[in-house]
Length: 480
Image (cartoon, rainbow, N blue to C red; front, top):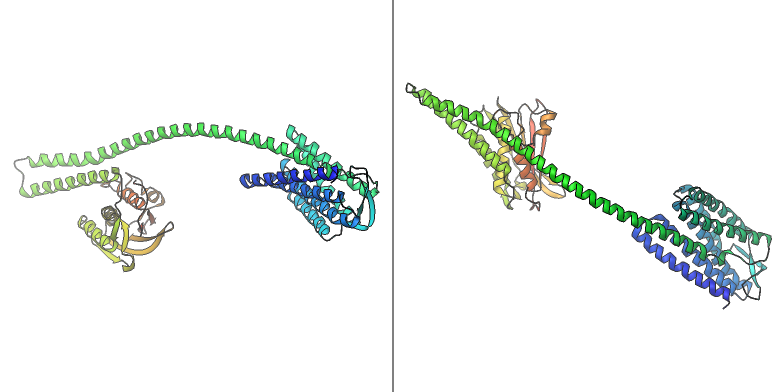
């Protein structure tokens, strides 16, 4: 094997290795220039191998397949070359890239079909040795395709020079210009039949090594930038964590202040009423009917204070469900009985239950679910001070990707406007003079603790529908 053939085989090996390396790098980084450069290196390796086989071919007939392989590699390399150069120049033109790949594909197809060379005409070829060998001439189709591919490669080269402000891009531009000039020289050599040696095959390693150096520099710089940004992100995270801790403290203080105001307001009024009632009971000339009235007031205000304390404790206490199988139909009926018993002073309200038997069992904490259902029924009953109807239905639904059961409570009360509906779940928000504003807030926490949710549909003057949704299976949500 001649020196020329050995050097070309070595170039093919280096190009193949670079192609595999950058192909693997593309699989990790998913950056298009890595993929284009891997294809470019692999195509040049194929071309160098074809040139090596051409050099050692004993006859024109043997040289033609090797020449076809050489030019197939060059055509494919031109497509990847334009793709790569436009990407590193940040001047991506999809039409130019697609057009170049189309021309490269036509050229490769012509090479596979054996249309690039005419074995009937042989010209002298130089092999870096003392002997000239006969090789086939490039056909008119091959000359035309090569000339056409010089157009997009020149376009990409001009785009790269326009962006070549950085040292690495300037180096890329020089290497690219040299590669295009060599390709143009070889084309002219074929057309004019100068019978000199072809340069492209022998300098294929130059763009491969040059572009590798450029990409390694860009890779190193990107990694350094990534490390700097990671450090900056860590510092930002620390600042954000401290700010969040301060915000949590501020919110806790605000919640304590809001809670204190609510407690002061809700407790002061019953205490004032109790004090007046006790003062009345101390009068010696108090009639029996008046004494009964004052005692009734004491009972009522004591119950009001007890309800306030219970609501506050229920809201402040962490909710940690103890999962079990709960008979939802029985639980709803029990909640209706308890809520109705606590609102006997209200006008007549007709309650209709429509509970499907196939959705009777759910997974959850029976005590928590009962408390939530009682709060919903209690709110619905108090929303109808003039009387009305409450319809409770049960249906199958979903909570995210899990099968769930929804219990819908529809009342015929005055309903809620948009502002009130948006704040209905907020703690301490209430439109009733005797309410604590914690009922729906507790209901919402219980639903979320079970992996479910609460939905509210209401329009002013048209009643409200509150849907309590819990999954059928056990939830895995943390205590809230």
